Every structure is written in C-alpha cells, then in structure tokens.
Length: 91
Image 1 (cartoon, one colour):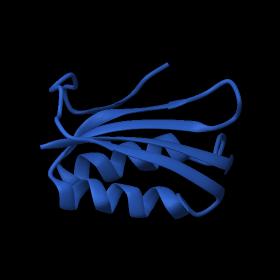
Image 2 (cartoon, helix red, strand yellow):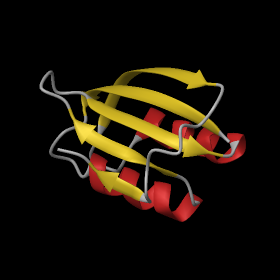
Image 3 (spheres, helix red, strand yellow):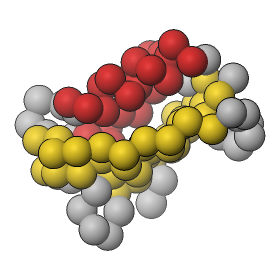
Image 4 (tube, one colour):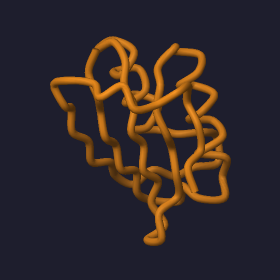
C-alpha cells in the first residue's frame, strides 16, 4: 500500500470534479479525500495499491466531462498511513 498526493489545476471546481473523483476512488477500492482549495485547485490524497493509484492519477489528468485540467502536480509516498475510512469529500 502506498499513498499519493495530487494537486489539480485549471477549471476544476464547479464541474463535478470532487464528486467524480470520489466515485472513481470508491470504484477502485482505494481510500482518501478530495477537496476544493481556496486557489481554485483540487487536492486529492489517496492510499491503496500502486496500480489503483495509477488509475486515479490517470483520471486526474483529464477529470470529468466539463473539467479543463491545465496541469497536475503529484507525489507518491512510500507508505500508506491508513488515515482514511473510504473515499470522502473534505471541506
């Protein structure tokens, strides 16, 4: 189990990005959080198997239908911290 932190920039708020990310995370069976940031970006932190985190990262590069992802930043962490219960929004 590993952990990934993803920051997504562009038109990513008000376009169901958090909703869809939560849905993708739950479908993949990973745990984590997704939240809107004051600067207009979306922050994702997730834990799970490498291949599942890679799928989440792939989704984050494009986002849902109405999103316009300009760029992402991401960082893998070697070990999961087991902090999350399911995949949720955070406010």
